[in-house]
Structure formats: C-alpha cells, structure tokens
Image (cartoon, rainbow, N blue to C red):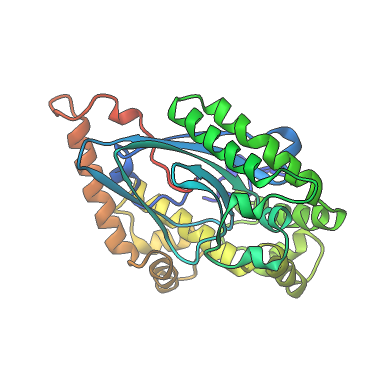
Length: 322
C-alpha cells in the first residue's frame, strides 16, 4: 500500500508524494493543477514546480485545506513572491474570482540551503522572496521580485513553461551562491530517507531505526540530521506519510473498515490511527470518511449528463500547496 510502483527511487527520486489534499472530491471543481519538472541542475534542491489556476463565478469562493509534507515552497502569486516554510499545522487557502499561482516545491532540507541558517526551519515561516533570496553574488531584490511578477503573469496567461522559466534563473543563481559540500551530503542523506518512505521500500510498519539503517547511521544521528536540515523529525515524517495514505484511501473508499485501514497503513490498531489522524486533520477518520462520501455523491450528481453544472469540471484536478 506504500506506492510499490515507485520502488527503487534514489536520491533524485520523489521525496514527497502527491497526496495531502483534504476531501479531494469536493475540490474537483475548485481549481486546476499542473506539475512540472525542475531544471536538471536544480533537481537536488527542487522537487517540482506546480501551477494552480482558478476561475470562480462572481461572489463564489472555495477554501482548500492541505495536510502539509515536510517540504517548503517558494510561491509567486498576485499578493507577492514569498518563501513558505513547513506549516505548523494544516494549510488552507480561500480562492475568489480568477487567478493563478506558480509554486516551487523544494526538497526537504533545501530551504536551509537557499535561505541559510537554522531560522529557515521555523514552523510557519513566511518571508518575502525579495528579502530571503538575494545575496552578495546572487540576484538583487529587484530581480527576484520581477521574476515573481513575470511568473504570475505567465501562469495567468496559461503559459506554464514560461512561468517556470521566469523563476528558474533566480533559483539557479541562489543555489550557485549557497550550495556547499556539507549541504550536498546532508541533502542526499535526507533524500534517501524520504525517497524510501514515499516508495515504501521498507513496508508500512517501518520505524525510525529502519530509516537510519538506510543511510548507515543511528536513530539519534538521523534525528539530529533532520533537526538540523528539515525541521521535523523522522518519526513525524513516518506518521505524516501514514496519515496522507489513510486520508487518500478513505477518500477513495469512504466505507472502508477502519481496522483494515489501520493495518494497511502500518498501525498496530485502530486507536493509534485515529489519534494520529485526528491530530493531523482535526477530525477522526470516521467523520472524514463520511465527509468524503457526501462530497463524492455531490460530485457524481454534478457530473451526471442531466446536471446543469459547468462543462469540463471532470477534467479539473484539485491542488493546494502541491
């Protein structure tokens, strides 16, 4: 159940799944998502780029909630170009009118490289990109802010490739200035661990000791590595991945027995799943399953041939901080 199709992912393989969207059926008509690969020379720092665009009727609004991954994002939107650390809790965003956003999802640990210092790991960090990214030999604040504006304009125009191209030189210049051999070693070790979690290399009941074995270290050393570079613990990573998977499975099959769900995602019993799930989402899995069932029924009605809803809704893919 831990994405066996991704087996063998290495240091440049995925370090974050595409899970995390709360109640995906409810979001299908809210906005559309496109994911794009980073430039090869930035693949050690960038997981992927993403573009979200929406066009809602006058007076309508849509709020999406996301269960965050251990990844930071650099986001260009109409309100500005900013660096976003790992949220301290759930992330939510309310959309109105029409618009588009370009995001760059960083690999775990990359934010410390690009921003510098342990302060980059503060939960809920939000810093203007024009403050966080410029450096003595890197882009100027004006260059960074201009790149963000050009990225938003391209995304609104539907040119996703141009949106990515607008921010890539900025990221490349900052990376060239701030990469170090020490950081490269740390990020490779972190990527190996996160890649194994996403790919399910160790099975659903893997523990911190199993993750430490992957990189030839001790659990305590692995905990220090994550504290210094990622900002969350290996245990947090395992729990969050299990919650992501449980939420995804419930959304696909809201009636699935919770005892079966708990076993599928690596919990010894239903009670431990329920506790972690409620801690992450603020609602128990049974309640979440009922919510997803209602949303799927509403979506089915909206997409039926007799429905009067807008054409093309079924082609939309919901997204948050993707």
